[in-house]
Length: 240
Image 1 (cartoon, one colour):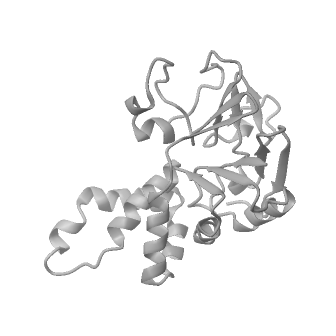
Image 2 (cartoon, helix red, strand yellow):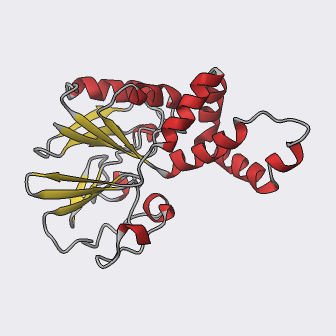
Image 3 (cartoon, rainbow, N blue to C red):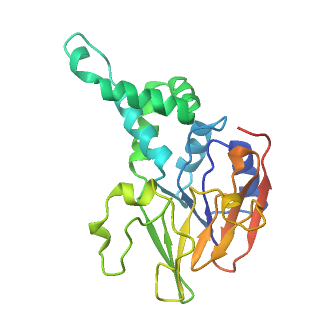
């Protein structure tokens, strides 16, 4: 089976419970649609578990992107010959705003790793793809964290920037692809903001599958099975 999940945000216990609940095995595949880190209690543990699973495919989210950028900067030995040029004023501001937006827990847990483990985490984050395409039983699923900003079916993928996939919110009132069997699968926008009844459940409409059910905010973590449309939920243990 092929599953998609998004916005784990360090919710390790819920992530592991969800894998158990779907009976995830070596024969299955899991696409993680961004924002593995920040906000929740165990972002590094989630990353380390994913790293050990060759059938888990990570897709870049805005929090992963910013964390990678800052951790690479910080994970360098500061010496007399580079102290003046290593961290700019912008780097310091970026770090400040990252900390305020949930990055403090990622920084704290990263600091607890040894040097080899730190390098492994950085290398893994660098391997995250920007988007994925899954073809399954006549259907096409485009997986991105947040959106395809400035989408036009006449554009090639190379014409988009990384920011187009990770920072903007999708227009869920608009069908992006003319083909009725092509779906855009995203996280980033909690589904309580999309569903008319404000429920933290997967949103399916206009060729969209929005799967961020707000686990880190005290709602749910969801796994959507692309093979049959079955949705599995795990309730959050506690709020951010």
